[in-house]
Image 1 (cartoon, rainbow, N blue to C red):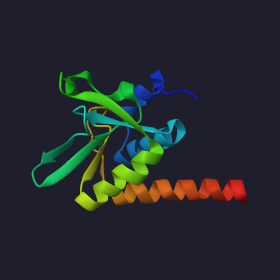
Image 2 (image 1 turned 90 degrees about the vertical axis):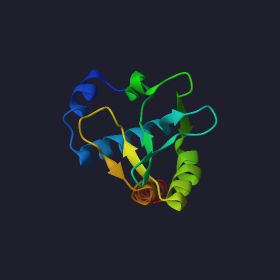
Image 3 (image 1 turned 135 degrees about the horizontal axis):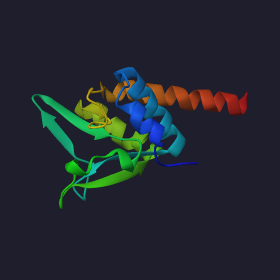
Length: 133
């Protein structure tokens, strides 16, 4: 299994709609079973934009722009399971929004953690049904 985008993905990402970006993100995190974000070394960074708290997410480390990094801000990954159980649940409780792959396209793809969790649980349920069925 590959854990980096193909060159053709990089070209296509810049032209994707918000829905296509979300679909790409979901397919890739399910495939790789990991999610990337930015960390201060202790926890993932949640940025404040006006009245919103926003957590930025990427499916691959290579998609995170070096411009977003500094001595105190690093790339960090977690497993899909921990992401779903801990991070998305916290994001729901804290009313964060999720910014999917910022900097990869000119478009902004914001999604609620509840919506993303519902989609991921649906994918897991479908896979479980297929395995059990």
